[in-house]
Image (cartoon, rainbow, N blue to C red):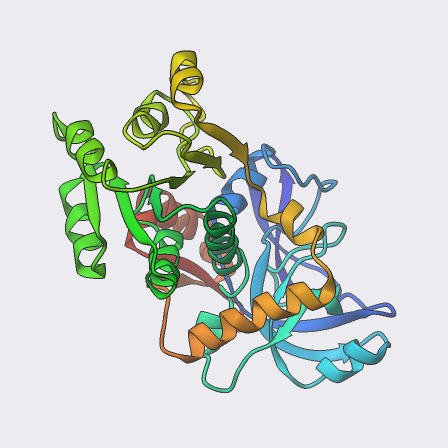
Amino acid sequence: MKALHLTSPNSLEVVEKPIPKPRKGQVLVKMAYSPINPSDLAFLTGNYGIKKPFPTVPGFEGSGEVIESGGGFYANYLKGKNVACVASDKLDGPWAEYMVTDAAKCVVIGKNVELQQGSMSFVNPLTALDFIKEAKAAKCDTIVMSAAASALSKMVHYLAQKEGLAFGGVVRREDQVNKLQTWGVDYVANTSEENWMDGLKEWSAKRKKVLFPDAIGGSDVPSKILRCLPARSKMLIYGSMNFEEPAVYIPRDFIFYEYEVAGYWLSKRAGNKTFLQALKDTRAVQQMLSAGFENDIQATFKPEEFAKALETYNTGMSKGKVLFDLT
Protein backbone atom coordinates (compact mmCIF):
# COMPACT_ATOMS: atom_id res chain seq x y z
CA MET A 1 0.00 0.00 0.00
CA LYS A 2 1.00 3.63 -0.47
CA ALA A 3 1.63 5.60 2.72
CA LEU A 4 3.23 8.76 4.00
CA HIS A 5 6.11 8.09 6.38
CA LEU A 6 7.40 10.53 8.98
CA THR A 7 11.03 9.48 9.32
CA SER A 8 12.13 12.31 11.64
CA PRO A 9 10.66 15.67 12.68
CA ASN A 10 9.31 17.49 9.60
CA SER A 11 10.68 14.80 7.26
CA LEU A 12 7.98 13.13 5.16
CA GLU A 13 8.23 10.70 2.28
CA VAL A 14 5.92 8.47 0.23
CA VAL A 15 6.61 4.76 0.65
CA GLU A 16 5.18 1.39 -0.31
CA LYS A 17 4.56 -0.94 2.63
CA PRO A 18 2.55 -4.10 3.38
CA ILE A 19 -1.11 -3.80 4.27
CA PRO A 20 -1.37 -4.26 8.06
CA LYS A 21 -3.45 -7.02 9.68
CA PRO A 22 -5.93 -6.28 12.47
CA ARG A 23 -5.85 -8.14 15.77
CA LYS A 24 -8.82 -8.95 17.98
CA GLY A 25 -10.78 -5.81 18.74
CA GLN A 26 -9.25 -4.03 15.75
CA VAL A 27 -10.37 -3.37 12.18
CA LEU A 28 -8.68 -2.67 8.86
CA VAL A 29 -10.02 0.47 7.21
CA LYS A 30 -9.58 1.19 3.50
CA MET A 31 -9.05 4.91 3.88
CA ALA A 32 -10.90 7.45 1.75
CA TYR A 33 -10.03 10.89 3.18
CA SER A 34 -8.02 12.32 6.04
CA PRO A 35 -7.78 16.02 6.97
CA ILE A 36 -4.80 18.06 8.07
CA ASN A 37 -5.41 19.56 11.52
CA PRO A 38 -3.24 21.84 13.70
CA SER A 39 -2.57 18.79 15.88
CA ASP A 40 -1.09 17.06 12.82
CA LEU A 41 1.27 19.97 12.22
CA ALA A 42 2.41 19.79 15.85
CA PHE A 43 2.90 16.02 15.55
CA LEU A 44 5.05 16.46 12.43
CA THR A 45 7.39 18.77 14.34
CA GLY A 46 7.63 16.44 17.33
CA ASN A 47 5.92 18.99 19.59
CA TYR A 48 2.74 17.06 20.33
CA GLY A 49 1.68 15.15 23.41
CA ILE A 50 1.45 11.83 21.54
CA LYS A 51 4.83 10.42 20.53
CA LYS A 52 5.40 7.48 18.17
CA PRO A 53 8.70 5.87 17.16
CA PHE A 54 10.01 6.68 13.68
CA PRO A 55 9.13 5.84 11.01
CA THR A 56 5.41 6.28 11.47
CA VAL A 57 2.38 7.14 9.36
CA PRO A 58 1.00 10.50 10.58
CA GLY A 59 -2.59 11.68 10.87
CA PHE A 60 -5.22 11.41 13.57
CA GLU A 61 -8.63 11.12 11.90
CA GLY A 62 -10.23 10.10 8.63
CA SER A 63 -12.95 8.10 6.93
CA GLY A 64 -13.19 4.92 4.91
CA GLU A 65 -14.67 1.43 4.69
CA VAL A 66 -13.96 -1.36 7.16
CA ILE A 67 -12.85 -4.28 5.01
CA GLU A 68 -11.55 -6.68 7.65
CA SER A 69 -12.21 -7.46 11.30
CA GLY A 70 -9.68 -8.91 13.69
CA GLY A 71 -12.49 -10.40 15.73
CA GLY A 72 -14.78 -9.21 18.47
CA PHE A 73 -18.46 -8.22 18.49
CA TYR A 74 -18.11 -4.54 17.56
CA ALA A 75 -15.26 -5.13 15.11
CA ASN A 76 -17.35 -7.75 13.31
CA TYR A 77 -20.35 -5.41 13.27
CA LEU A 78 -18.30 -2.71 11.51
CA LYS A 79 -17.16 -4.91 8.63
CA GLY A 80 -18.43 -3.61 5.30
CA LYS A 81 -19.55 -0.27 6.73
CA ASN A 82 -18.31 3.26 6.06
CA VAL A 83 -16.86 4.76 9.21
CA ALA A 84 -15.30 7.84 10.67
CA CYS A 85 -12.19 6.76 12.54
CA VAL A 86 -9.26 7.94 14.60
CA ALA A 87 -5.81 6.41 14.88
CA SER A 88 -4.67 4.31 17.79
CA ASP A 89 -2.05 6.02 19.96
CA LYS A 90 0.26 3.05 19.38
CA LEU A 91 -0.31 2.34 15.67
CA ASP A 92 0.15 4.11 12.35
CA GLY A 93 -2.19 6.96 11.43
CA PRO A 94 -4.55 7.42 8.47
CA TRP A 95 -2.31 9.15 5.92
CA ALA A 96 -2.15 5.88 4.01
CA GLU A 97 -4.34 3.73 1.77
CA TYR A 98 -5.12 1.42 4.71
CA MET A 99 -5.09 1.82 8.49
CA VAL A 100 -5.56 -0.60 11.39
CA THR A 101 -7.20 0.93 14.44
CA ASP A 102 -9.23 -0.10 17.46
CA ALA A 103 -12.85 -0.85 16.64
CA ALA A 104 -13.86 1.41 19.53
CA LYS A 105 -12.27 4.31 17.66
CA CYS A 106 -14.67 3.93 14.72
CA VAL A 107 -18.22 5.18 14.28
CA VAL A 108 -20.53 4.27 11.41
CA ILE A 109 -21.16 7.24 9.10
CA GLY A 110 -24.78 8.06 8.39
CA LYS A 111 -26.09 7.49 4.89
CA ASN A 112 -26.55 11.23 4.37
CA VAL A 113 -22.95 12.07 5.31
CA GLU A 114 -20.34 12.08 2.55
CA LEU A 115 -16.95 10.51 3.22
CA GLN A 116 -15.18 13.86 2.87
CA GLN A 117 -17.30 15.39 5.63
CA GLY A 118 -17.17 12.16 7.62
CA SER A 119 -13.38 12.32 7.68
CA MET A 120 -13.68 15.40 9.92
CA SER A 121 -16.13 13.87 12.39
CA PHE A 122 -13.84 13.59 15.39
CA VAL A 123 -11.24 16.24 16.20
CA ASN A 124 -13.11 19.50 15.62
CA PRO A 125 -16.68 18.31 16.32
CA LEU A 126 -15.81 16.55 19.57
CA THR A 127 -13.73 19.54 20.68
CA ALA A 128 -16.67 21.83 19.89
CA LEU A 129 -19.04 19.63 21.89
CA ASP A 130 -16.63 19.68 24.83
CA PHE A 131 -16.40 23.48 24.71
CA ILE A 132 -20.18 23.75 24.91
CA LYS A 133 -20.25 21.31 27.84
CA GLU A 134 -17.47 23.28 29.53
CA ALA A 135 -19.36 26.56 29.10
CA LYS A 136 -22.55 25.13 30.54
CA ALA A 137 -20.73 23.47 33.45
CA ALA A 138 -19.02 26.77 34.30
CA LYS A 139 -22.39 28.59 34.00
CA CYS A 140 -21.12 30.80 31.17
CA ASP A 141 -23.62 32.61 28.97
CA THR A 142 -21.08 33.46 26.27
CA ILE A 143 -18.16 31.95 24.35
CA VAL A 144 -15.37 34.11 22.90
CA MET A 145 -12.77 32.43 20.68
CA SER A 146 -9.42 33.61 19.36
CA ALA A 147 -8.33 32.60 15.84
CA ALA A 148 -12.07 32.58 15.27
CA ALA A 149 -12.10 32.20 11.48
CA SER A 150 -11.32 28.50 11.87
CA ALA A 151 -13.48 25.48 11.06
CA LEU A 152 -13.59 24.70 14.77
CA SER A 153 -14.95 28.16 15.60
CA LYS A 154 -17.65 27.78 12.97
CA MET A 155 -18.77 24.56 14.62
CA VAL A 156 -18.65 26.02 18.14
CA HIS A 157 -20.75 28.96 16.96
CA TYR A 158 -23.27 26.59 15.39
CA LEU A 159 -23.63 24.62 18.63
CA ALA A 160 -23.65 27.78 20.78
CA GLN A 161 -26.62 29.09 18.83
CA LYS A 162 -28.51 25.86 19.49
CA GLU A 163 -27.78 26.14 23.21
CA GLY A 164 -28.68 29.83 23.47
CA LEU A 165 -25.12 30.98 24.16
CA ALA A 166 -23.78 34.25 22.74
CA PHE A 167 -20.65 33.95 20.58
CA GLY A 168 -17.86 36.46 19.97
CA GLY A 169 -14.85 35.93 17.73
CA VAL A 170 -11.42 37.57 17.69
CA VAL A 171 -9.58 37.65 14.35
CA ARG A 172 -6.70 39.60 12.85
CA ARG A 173 -7.82 40.58 9.34
CA GLU A 174 -10.77 42.39 7.77
CA ASP A 175 -11.62 39.52 5.42
CA GLN A 176 -11.94 37.28 8.48
CA VAL A 177 -14.33 39.80 10.03
CA ASN A 178 -16.50 39.52 6.93
CA LYS A 179 -16.37 35.73 7.12
CA LEU A 180 -17.63 35.64 10.70
CA GLN A 181 -20.35 38.14 9.90
CA THR A 182 -21.69 35.79 7.24
CA TRP A 183 -21.99 33.14 9.98
CA GLY A 184 -24.15 35.52 11.99
CA VAL A 185 -21.92 35.73 15.07
CA ASP A 186 -22.88 38.19 17.80
CA TYR A 187 -19.61 40.14 17.80
CA VAL A 188 -16.27 40.24 15.99
CA ALA A 189 -13.08 41.98 17.14
CA ASN A 190 -10.23 42.62 14.72
CA THR A 191 -6.85 42.87 16.47
CA SER A 192 -5.40 44.83 13.55
CA GLU A 193 -7.66 47.76 14.51
CA GLU A 194 -6.32 50.25 17.03
CA ASN A 195 -9.18 50.21 19.54
CA TRP A 196 -10.26 46.58 19.23
CA MET A 197 -10.04 46.00 22.98
CA ASP A 198 -12.44 48.85 23.74
CA GLY A 199 -15.12 47.38 21.51
CA LEU A 200 -14.69 43.85 22.87
CA LYS A 201 -14.77 45.13 26.45
CA GLU A 202 -17.96 47.10 25.83
CA TRP A 203 -19.72 44.12 24.25
CA SER A 204 -18.48 41.67 26.91
CA ALA A 205 -19.67 43.96 29.72
CA LYS A 206 -23.22 42.91 28.87
CA ARG A 207 -22.35 39.26 29.54
CA LYS A 208 -22.33 37.48 32.89
CA LYS A 209 -19.45 35.05 32.40
CA VAL A 210 -17.42 34.05 29.35
CA LEU A 211 -15.64 30.88 28.35
CA PHE A 212 -12.59 31.86 26.28
CA PRO A 213 -11.07 28.93 24.32
CA ASP A 214 -7.67 30.16 23.13
CA ALA A 215 -5.77 28.74 20.17
CA ILE A 216 -2.95 31.30 20.10
CA GLY A 217 -1.02 30.38 23.23
CA GLY A 218 1.88 32.80 22.78
CA SER A 219 2.27 36.61 22.72
CA ASP A 220 0.18 39.10 24.72
CA VAL A 221 -2.98 38.78 22.61
CA PRO A 222 -4.65 36.06 24.76
CA SER A 223 -4.01 38.14 27.88
CA LYS A 224 -5.49 41.23 26.21
CA ILE A 225 -8.60 39.29 25.21
CA LEU A 226 -9.00 37.92 28.74
CA ARG A 227 -8.67 41.43 30.15
CA CYS A 228 -11.74 42.48 28.15
CA LEU A 229 -13.96 39.82 29.69
CA PRO A 230 -16.14 39.93 32.82
CA ALA A 231 -14.76 38.88 36.20
CA ARG A 232 -14.53 35.13 36.86
CA SER A 233 -14.44 34.34 33.13
CA LYS A 234 -12.47 31.22 32.17
CA MET A 235 -9.75 30.81 29.58
CA LEU A 236 -9.31 27.33 28.13
CA ILE A 237 -5.95 26.95 26.36
CA TYR A 238 -6.26 24.33 23.62
CA GLY A 239 -3.65 25.40 21.06
CA SER A 240 -0.31 27.09 20.53
CA MET A 241 -0.42 28.69 17.10
CA ASN A 242 2.16 31.25 18.23
CA PHE A 243 4.89 29.18 19.88
CA GLU A 244 7.66 31.60 18.90
CA GLU A 245 6.61 34.34 21.37
CA PRO A 246 6.25 33.52 25.07
CA ALA A 247 2.83 34.00 26.60
CA VAL A 248 2.41 37.20 28.61
CA TYR A 249 -0.06 37.34 31.50
CA ILE A 250 -0.67 40.02 34.14
CA PRO A 251 -0.96 38.59 37.68
CA ARG A 252 -3.20 41.40 38.94
CA ASP A 253 -5.86 40.41 36.40
CA PHE A 254 -6.16 37.02 38.09
CA ILE A 255 -6.05 38.54 41.57
CA PHE A 256 -8.66 41.27 41.14
CA TYR A 257 -10.90 39.70 38.47
CA GLU A 258 -10.59 36.07 39.60
CA TYR A 259 -10.03 34.79 36.08
CA GLU A 260 -9.56 31.05 35.66
CA VAL A 261 -7.11 29.34 33.29
CA ALA A 262 -7.16 25.67 32.34
CA GLY A 263 -5.78 23.48 29.59
CA TYR A 264 -7.72 21.34 27.14
CA TRP A 265 -6.43 18.37 25.15
CA LEU A 266 -8.96 16.31 23.23
CA SER A 267 -6.92 13.10 23.44
CA LYS A 268 -6.92 13.29 27.24
CA ARG A 269 -10.62 14.19 27.48
CA ALA A 270 -11.63 11.49 25.02
CA GLY A 271 -9.54 8.91 26.85
CA ASN A 272 -11.42 9.61 30.07
CA LYS A 273 -14.84 9.01 28.52
CA THR A 274 -16.61 5.69 28.68
CA PHE A 275 -17.39 3.94 25.42
CA LEU A 276 -21.07 4.87 25.79
CA GLN A 277 -20.21 8.53 26.42
CA ALA A 278 -17.95 8.60 23.37
CA LEU A 279 -20.61 6.89 21.27
CA LYS A 280 -23.22 9.43 22.39
CA ASP A 281 -20.94 12.33 21.41
CA THR A 282 -20.03 10.92 18.03
CA ARG A 283 -23.68 10.20 17.27
CA ALA A 284 -24.45 13.83 18.09
CA VAL A 285 -21.81 14.82 15.55
CA GLN A 286 -23.29 12.54 12.90
CA GLN A 287 -26.74 14.02 13.52
CA MET A 288 -25.30 17.50 13.09
CA LEU A 289 -23.65 16.58 9.80
CA SER A 290 -26.79 14.81 8.60
CA ALA A 291 -28.79 17.95 9.40
CA GLY A 292 -26.77 19.89 6.85
CA PHE A 293 -23.83 21.37 8.78
CA GLU A 294 -20.67 21.03 6.72
CA ASN A 295 -17.05 22.00 7.14
CA ASP A 296 -15.54 24.15 4.41
CA ILE A 297 -13.05 22.25 2.24
CA GLN A 298 -10.61 24.32 0.23
CA ALA A 299 -8.64 21.53 -1.47
CA THR A 300 -7.86 17.81 -1.66
CA PHE A 301 -4.47 16.31 -2.51
CA LYS A 302 -3.05 12.87 -3.21
CA PRO A 303 -0.33 11.64 -0.80
CA GLU A 304 2.37 12.37 -3.42
CA GLU A 305 1.39 16.03 -3.19
CA PHE A 306 1.99 16.23 0.57
CA ALA A 307 4.32 19.24 0.35
CA LYS A 308 1.73 21.29 -1.52
CA ALA A 309 -1.03 20.07 0.81
CA LEU A 310 0.86 21.15 3.92
CA GLU A 311 1.78 24.50 2.40
CA THR A 312 -1.83 25.14 1.36
CA TYR A 313 -3.10 24.44 4.86
CA ASN A 314 -0.29 26.30 6.63
CA THR A 315 -0.83 29.46 4.63
CA GLY A 316 -4.62 29.46 4.60
CA MET A 317 -6.15 27.69 7.59
CA SER A 318 -9.11 30.06 7.69
CA LYS A 319 -10.01 29.22 4.06
CA GLY A 320 -11.18 25.72 4.94
CA LYS A 321 -9.87 22.23 5.51
CA VAL A 322 -7.26 20.47 3.35
CA LEU A 323 -7.82 16.74 2.89
CA PHE A 324 -5.64 13.88 1.70
CA ASP A 325 -7.51 11.90 -0.95
CA LEU A 326 -6.57 8.27 -0.29
CA THR A 327 -9.01 6.63 -2.69
